[in-house]
Amino acid sequence: MYVTEYDLYAVPPRWQFLRLETSDGRVGWGEVYTKWHFAGDSEPATRNAVDQLMHQYVLGEDPSRIEYLWQAMYRSSFYRGGPIHMSAIAGIDEALWDLKGKAAGMPVYELLGGPARDRVRLYEHVRAHNGNDVTDPAAVAADQAREHVERGFTAVKLVPTGGLELIDTPAAIESARDIVGAVREAVGPDIDVALDFHGRTSKAMARRLTRALEEFDPMFVEEPATPEHGHALERIAEGTTAPIATGERLYTRGEFRPLLEADAVDVVQPDVSSAGGITETKKIADLAATYDASIAPHCPIGPIALAASLHVDAVAPNALIQEQVILEDETAMGYVENDELFEPNDGYLELPEKPGLGIEIDEDRVQELAGTNLAFDRSPGHRADGSVGER
Ligand SMILES: [Mg+2]
Image 1 (tube, rainbow, N blue to C red):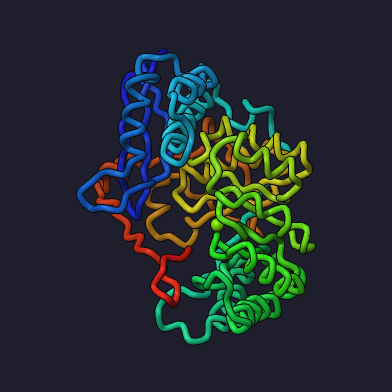
Image 2: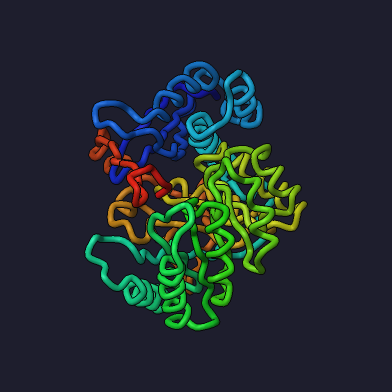
């Protein structure tokens, strides 16, 4: 059996589904994170990377040799790593695992050693600052959190600030306290509330904000520093009892290692579709476990990426909770024939039972919507003086 062809479909809202086919007619699916897709008349950079990797290393090869192919795609590229290369490898890796599971007649997690748990806990997003006319973000956030809990979720996550100054005012911190306090009051102590600083905080602001929000007992504080300032996390972590999380912008074990060695993180958040797929994310989970850190895989994209994440969550003893956005996206289930896979029960998903990733893709629907322009406006966030800040 060898890989005969592939298609990479660009579909709404801004996802890329990779379809591999083999000489014996099997089909495997992966999801390639859409990155560097700012201009409407040019393709996302990850598409180009997939084309190159497929032609150079995968077409004509035996898809069951996943580790070999992964090493070939990674190691043969002298300029390796980073968001584009690792996302392209990730989508291909997921499709290879899907093929392998389908060939074996087993879910991928069985091939990875079998499940460590019965089901996977999810969290839902609270979007306090969405929309320009939000005059009372604390009330909006509290209402959303309450709704999620009524739907059965036991954990929510929110970004408690808009863009921040390098050193911001007490009022900026007070606003974040209002929002997080309102959410905590709305959901009570039985629900977990995670906070995502989204890299918006300088290290000085991260220390102040973490301490100011500590009394609301966050499940974790995510990205209190941008990836290039991972060195700052150790001191941030020392100054708080709140668990520190990061990792959606880190791509290999090597990038997580220094944070774990410094005991600067409690929760790592690799994205299966960004960090080299199931193969590398499983290894990141194992590395984290040796430092008593858990994983909470990042996943703000589509259903194939989420299905792939569930297999890592299933086998990683240290999987804490899974991110997802597809339950709030009307288009997502249109691609999935067995959408019961993504019906949460008390805020948990059952493990997929069908072979491979366990997701059945509606190919007609994918082809119907393929060719979508994935351009994404990512204009700069500005500080008060007009300089560019984080957003
Ligand atoms: Mg995040």
